[in-house]
Length: 152
Image (cartoon, rainbow, N blue to C red; front, side):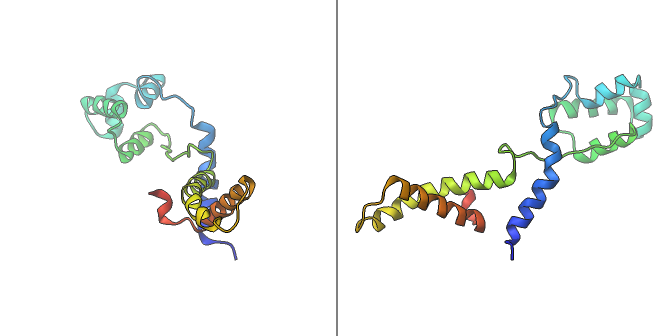
């Protein structure tokens, strides 16, 4: 039976995959709300009416978007008022969550194993290739288990 953690990671990677295609899209200089509103030739007052807020309230929404202090809920409300859908997600810096886990598992294996290999190798000298193989094997084991210590 497949490891439950592995299945969850694979499912998440599949859900996040579409975001990789859009991760390099630049946010317009004045923000999405302002840019879309003005592209539609919609006034502050008109968007405010759709949102049931004042013109100043719309200005505040546009400011909060630029500063990064706007809530997801507010962005969803604005999107709805513009007859759009607000979409958000996360994108790994390592092409997938699985690759990220592999990297961290390898780092942890390299950190832990050399200490253990010194005591094992007192009786026999391990070659560099054998040491690397031990590290790779241990990294695979760590990846399979995904211990909480992976994130320390």
